[in-house]
Length: 160
Image (tube, rainbow, N blue to C red; front, side, top):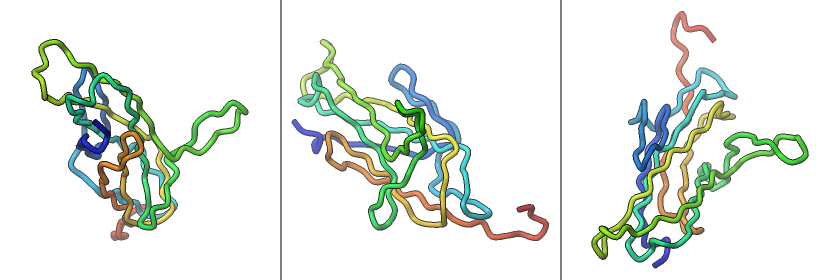
């Protein structure tokens, strides 16, 4: 069984964490980041992700990769991480490895669900545009989650 037989559900949130196989999230149900001017920094973007693993794909290692692409398919920088040289390196992908078992009480043929949360703090956006979160398992794209970055119209009395 390959990754192509898996399914992914995902959502955007203001904050999320995964604890004991469940996702706890705040501020879900949105798909647009608003900013009064650009470049802009958004305090936090969280992703809640569930991977539906078929029975025949359990007891095997798998890799989830999440990236953010523009309409041309160009990966966007998600942030910076420390490197061995001490200079921060750009991060374009979030990765998670998983290997879900097959408990003895699992009926033959039933899927397993792997719940994950991914959080990006201080995410930068250079301009208003349409983006998409791309979810791949073992190198196979399984889902795209759209996210728009939009300029907030200036309102009278609004501070810049």
